[in-house]
Image (cartoon, rainbow over all chains, first blue to last red; front, side):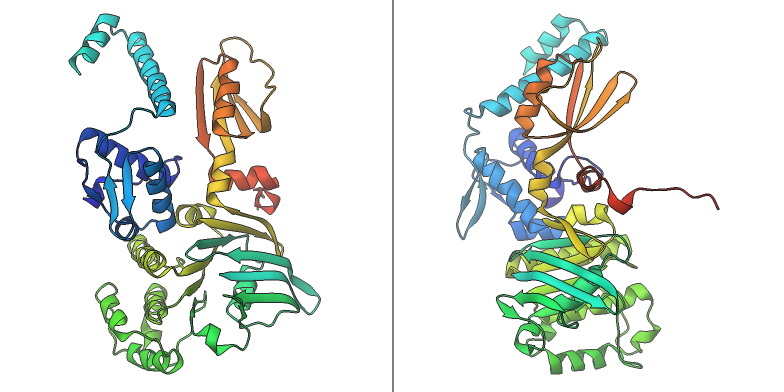
Length: 121
Length: 297
């Protein structure tokens, strides 16, 4: 369970962001369902050989963004609904889609094809 | 918490430490980096109470460490040059540690044995350098330390052993709120494990920061323009580098502000990356002696 998050030490992205994004992906893909307990800071630190303070920071940010919630003495759990009020992240993702679409168009994929991909979602 | 305040030390007329001030918070992993001979080991020997300062103070949880067995009980030290008694095997060393550290936890030691399978009956001097380090770590972790002081701990360890050792150390940090003070000349290695970093140069601490602070306010900004690039006003630029049509800037500031400013210039491509510790060091301090000067011999 812990090993689904992989840390690439050569990646310039800070480790705490890699942990954070790893959990986000698992939550968004539905691998982690709501109310499911995620590993404790200690378990993560032991398994991945990562500084617990780094993991704590990732968990704090995940909580601030509404993906998880912490219960004192019990652990950290996946939050029921991923909130929509996270405008900054939404803006960021839209920019990424634009970039990807632009690249596809450059590579010769027709616009309607891209739109049909989106329609399938 | 470890507090070192205005520490000075000289050996004959060599000033080894000059006005060193550091703070290692509880449950943190503090890394000290510096080139060879910058005073890391001397500083460590003060923190563990082996050397007496010329001036200044070293306090561990508010109490002075020098000649203070009560404090030293809580401190585990893995030096760079590990010493074991001649002819001693692991059993002998365990007995010695039990006599010195009343909190020595044999149960914990036994748990570590399968991780580092070593022959406990043969003299430790017959072990390889890496295996001696294993023994030192097993003993250090078994005294249930509140403070782990490690001098170049990963030297001589293979990658698997490194990971094992860090995993064990981090468990202690997470579970028992131990603090770790670790020295290295390898910025890259410390970057992955520490949450606080101090950089030493010629006996002085030239930079002390938490990694969060460092990573959040200096960035590498890559942009490409179709037209000649505009003047980069509104950005605090530390360095500028141009390769073909791509411009690489090292910029200080908040992530969002930088992105806003940069987007105003309408670049074709934009990429904002955090700086590695090594890059920060080079830009913050001009690299000091870390500059590579090549000599042909």
